[in-house]
Length: 180
Image 1 (tube, rainbow, N blue to C red):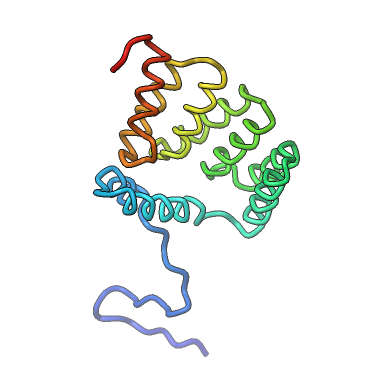
Image 2: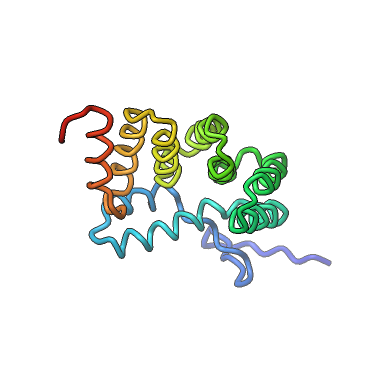
């Protein structure tokens, strides 16, 4: 027999063994934009990455880990294949698109990397890491204005990013030929 309890207080308390809900990305992103130090920003970056990976299924997590191992071994095409499989399982998870873009960049597939970043940023336009990766890809493609524009988004989302101002000035000079 199953007992049903009615809570007069309204909300049912969470079970001690229940997983915590993911942190709100918009709250963390706002905190990152207002971080007072590089250390605080680094902590928020880690928390954002964890939150973005929260919705991955166990199988997608395994495929993602395999992809990262392939990248570490210099096997970019193996990483792309693993991430292809993960995206079949969970095409709605933006970070998988970003991860495949990174793998495609390592495989020198710049067009594929830009396409994947387009999907990732359409799903999560507040992802400073994806904007940073897009800036790097556009730099490799020689599109300095696109690289500089993407870097401006990085700086808006993560003003404490390491080397941020210097990289922005360098990209601006490459894009427009004059100092900022």
